[in-house]
Image 1 (cartoon, rainbow, N blue to C red):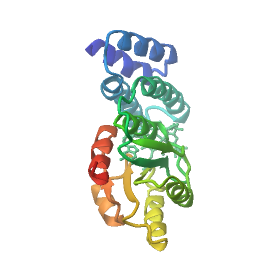
Image 2: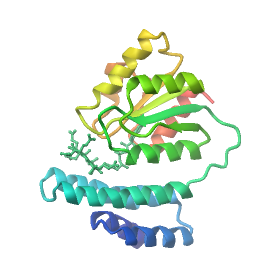
Image 3: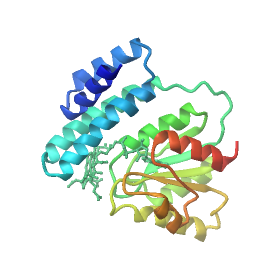
Image 4: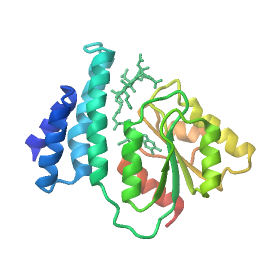
Length: 212
Ligand code: B12
């Protein structure tokens, strides 16, 4: 199993999409859980790429190629993470904030939430605070979850809190924040109802917020 996780990680660091497909196929055939494959194989791979980018060992084109491999891995694993819940535990509107195009982590959160029994409306990336609120009102959402991967786009999570307050929706619709630069202290400082470090934590916290 360890070898497959290492291969998954290498498939992302080497930006090898054929290897991504082959690892997913072999792992699923061997009965490995798709969520575990993501968590122990592919995500450590993209984290390593991120560190190399930060240390200027690799540059944007390479980061982009690895991120395409990671995106494929997430898509293939997400398809295999199926929900066996019949009744919805709650409605979640999810997206990446305005100005931010990082959507791999957000899509993994979406699939974990769906697998945990929530109805998820995934608005994609570069989503304005107004669009989050409009959709949440339209679908009578319990929670709005926002993902921010850039320090410069985190402030959009605060804008969302402001709009919810202005429209007297704060408290009626709960908010969850996540993404690499985000932490509990940031969530507390903007008045978000919850924060989680990863997709499994997001599902646990949203269950708690919705109280079902
Ligand atoms: C892949 C990647 C890209 C890809 C994105 C492809 C895509 N479709 O998403 C590409 C190449 C396009 C890209 C572009 C850029 N990137 Co980039 N990118 C990354 C990288 C390497 C990995 C991100 C990722 O996918 N991680 C894997 C997923 C699974 O993890 P995750 O996103 O953190 O999600 C998990 C948790 O955070 C949490 N979570 C996520 N969302 C949510 C939401 C909720 C509600 C909850 C509860 C939890 C939660 O659960 C997820 C699953 O466990 C990071 C490095 C890093 N360490 O994160 C840099 C990084 C985020 N990028 C960075 C930068 C600078 C950029 C660019 C500005 C580069 C440039 N000069 O153009 C552009 C930004 C363009 C824009 N406007 O958005 C910096 C940001 C630095 C900063 N301080 O802001 C980072 C940190 C790299 C670095 N170390 O310098 N990037």
